[in-house]
Image: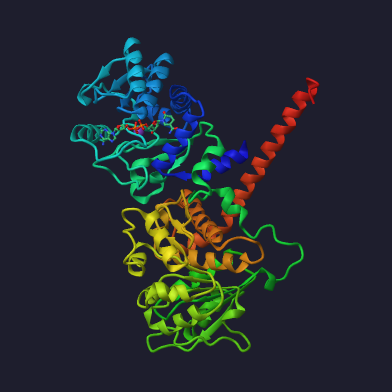
Length: 558
Ligand SMILES: NC(=O)C1=CN([C@@H]2O[C@H](COP(=O)(O)OP(=O)(O)OC[C@H]3O[C@@H](n4cnc5c(N)ncnc54)[C@H](O)[C@@H]3O)[C@@H](O)[C@H]2O)[C@H](O)CC1
Ligand SMILES: [K+]
């Protein structure tokens, strides 16, 4: 069961893929009405959990507002399709559980199954309204207007009703997707419900993981309804878009370490960063690399930065390089008998300034895996990016934010419209792994596979946090060859780890308290938090299986 949950939680689908998977289920004999019932009962149960006393959810919020209200009043928004059908089943179930239920159904032409549920709800005496103004004051709402069947911009009638509903500032639970969002791109088609919770049905919809959707999605969770893995496999093959999960991220960390090892076996990373103007970028990149656990860390900086670098990172080999009049690295001067290929990985860019452009060609000509960030990317953007990158044999990872991405890849589809399409196109064209930073960082490999980090925090939107990621990523890349892990999986792990550190820091210090230096201090705490959690899971699973064995033993079954 656990494995299924993990597999399902990684899958991301478009509306077309969901339609195809749904079609296989119905073709295999599952009646549409039965599936709707199965799904909507699961939704109803979850709504009641949220609405129950003491849960940190809708019920908690409502009780703070209306402690005396004898029973919760819920408004059900019903659309013409099966999303509306789901909502009507939920309406019926909450009605039987004692909730005061009202229905708003703006369109008179409903799909047959939805129509049947509508008639039954009316037969139970549940009040149904066609005008949003008629809907009495509810404690919370269930949004079943549109799911993954939304095909075009909303009509004015429905758009103005949704805007009105959003004005009420009531908790809203959206079924499958907040109505009005494009299922694949997350684009707002006119307007959209601002959900407090989104209960995504069966498999994660791609649109819920796109930056432009996030202010509408609220807290998203998956309602599993036992879609056979075989149907998912048949339609998706190996999923082209995956969610990064704690389990997948932790599994690629260079942990546990072999009992017998030494510092050179745990990777040697070269950072090329910093300038007189941006010394801090070099320090932050170094601290990110330190946290990765990399065995040996060399940092090439302009000569004048050497003292402060050694003070901040005494364990690192600081390589003082000749500098330009503006205080940038003029040329790389590596210790004798070493050249760029001596390093397991190179990370280049933070704080370099564009005056360091001669360095870039050197690192591009190297045969080591290479991470380019910040000015490393800005200098690259001045070269013919795609052809330059295609010449490299070794792995190359680019970590642009939206602006750097636009400069690097002016000809790929607009990342604002669909980040997944844009990052995939950039990676395929350039033959590199591209990490496009954002609220939901997206990573693509040259084969066009995409990973999305589903959890982050606006606390990371600060100068320097990208430098930390570059060091962390470079350090993990330098250790990668000790395990058979792909570069893109390492990149996905670095993105997850970096975001988790931001989340942990923000929990303890608020979203204003996560400067880049502080962020570096939370990186190791992420591993402690998740290793404790997975030990607990193991223990729980272990405890649970022991407990079950005891019961069966008593019953003399095993
Ligand atoms: N996938 C599954 O296994 C299950 C899905 N369920 C639910 O069904 C919806 C999808 O239902 P569908 O009828 O295909 O579409 P919607 O209800 O999302 O769309 C409504 C309907 O409205 C029409 N329409 C499209 N765009 C517009 C518009 N802009 N204005 C007006 N009308 C529009 C279009 O004809 C659509 O058919 C899914 O989200 C789940 O909630 C099952 O309940 C369980 C299994
Ligand atoms: K919906």
